[in-house]
Picture: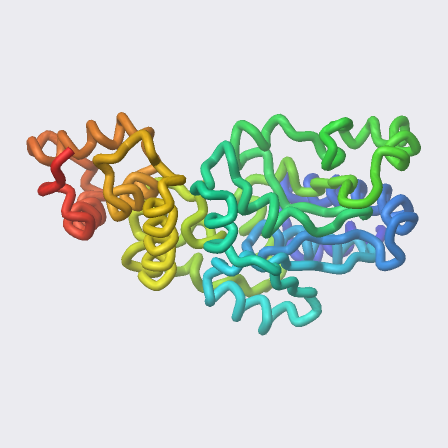
Length: 318
């Protein structure tokens, strides 16, 4: 019985998780030699402090491969996440960006969106250039991620299955350099249940934000947040929300932002951004609120009531 089989038995993983751990370890061990060609510390492991990056970190530990974990701070990271990483993962190298999230919006003269996540490109995903980078993405998370393969490059020139790795890896050498990188996703096939089983059965602590009901613990004000998360930001993170409003006010005065919709005030622009709707859908939402025909589901009714009152949407004139 080899070391991985011993560990799988020791931790009592389910059959499904056991098979996925075996596969992840195979991906890591098979690509380690290649990672060492680029960087003498092995893999560059992208770490966020969330459950998926924890699973990635600890499966790399199980595999016994060389890696160095890095956390690219975005300046809108939740404080409990930063404290958790400092306390539980002191070996993770933390990088502070030259420009914060709010100054970046001022520079770009627009708000980030799901389709234009310039904040991620600049603040979060810029690390690891010239390395084989490990990321903790999972296909289950989104349609876009479900289309990803386990091996790829930041140039999007290659998108390979694990079985195609040997056939193409020499060609990938010439493709990667400078800011480019080879991206390996060892836990791509894992489900959320797999991740929690892995962490819990190994006795690994997680950030307590999950225990408070959070499904994801990424950046505050992130356009990838779901609607419920966005609606909570003015109440959970009033300082960051106020700072975003100040940025919107500056862009509004410059005339460089939202020029097509002069009837929107800066505060209404913020409400629109947090609502995750198109402009026309948001206008329709306001009309339904004012007519009394907007009926949120019971689970979110209290939150919507707070949001509507916070932005005074019942008394907005469009």
